[in-house]
Length: 193
Image 1 (cartoon, rainbow, N blue to C red):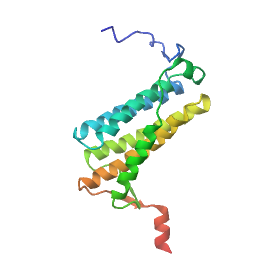
Image 2 (cartoon, rainbow, N blue to C red; image 1 turned 60 degrees about the horizontal axis):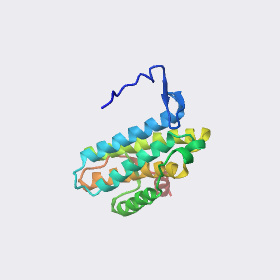
Image 3 (cartoon, rainbow, N blue to C red; image 1 turned 30 degrees about the vertical axis):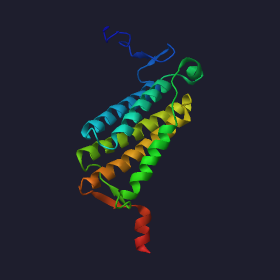
Image 4 (cartoon, rainbow, N blue to C red; image 1 turned 180 degrees about the vertical axis):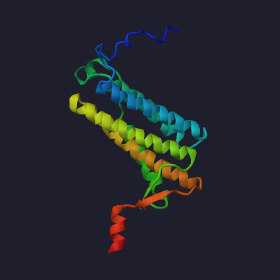
């Protein structure tokens, strides 16, 4: 194996797809760093679940698609189609939606904000949700400077919703009590009438 360190980043720049160098705090690098962190967190979620858990195949696919997304985000839009052979599949968006549609009706009560926590796996899923939201915010900042493929933006939005639903389902499935914060505003208004 070659040496892992190159010393090329010692002065605060890093290479991006296509050969250009940018500051390490460039929004493209920040967005990709958030995606990388999300992928690591999903790996942690998977490590807390049994290997036979029903969510393992979808989470594995999500991790693979995040790698594709990171490759595309690392490539400036002007050269993306010509220089990057990776293709992001919107099928993963539909897979996330199908999973949410499957488990949402199984969640007992949708009327409350809940405190993140529950089982160890559910707490890790809540962390994935929060990281996905941050990654989505960074991608939109990059998108204003250099367009990000629309499917990737949608994917990140779905991921945060998916992890929220998965966390609640996992907590309830394991029989752990959810810690409620307060009812959604529209539920409070309905009670007052």
